[in-house]
Image (cartoon, rainbow, N blue to C red; front, side, top):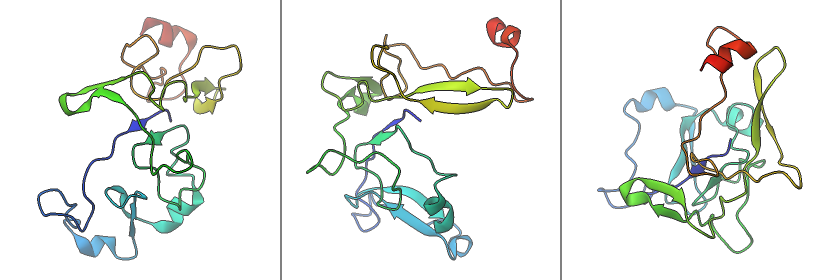
Amino acid sequence: WNNAILYVGCGVMGDLDCSVPPPENIAECKGMEDFIAPTGQSIVLRCVDPGQVQAGDRYDFRNDISSQGFPAVLQREPKPPAGQSGFDLKFVDPKHGDFHLAEGSAAIGAGCRVVLRGSSGELECEPVLPGEPSIDVGAFDAKGGRYEPPCIPEDGPPSQAECAVQ
């Protein structure tokens, strides 16, 4: 969740220098599909079971936004404003690795609060309530620092003490 995705490319039918090559082992993709951005310029998912995409459990882009929108099969995912094929992410200088959000970016304030719930250690994406500080979509927090994911040890839910040490 909360990813700002800048797709680049010219799709599977574009010039050889920027088109997406077929999978290395095309036999492994039998019965699988590629899912293309609405603009046709970029592959969002490559060689994937269409049933998994339609179920929406494994591929979950909620609170993500992308520069070219998402394929129609991803029905729960954010849709660009009417009349647009994607979102204007307005990264400061993506060609040189500066993915901070510039003023007017669709990613500003569009995020959810990612929280760790219960003893199961599952993450949830909660909406930001009126009056609470907004959360930007992308890898930087509202103060411009790198996003730090919640504390989740590999061997199960963390204790408060484990997370405090980190």
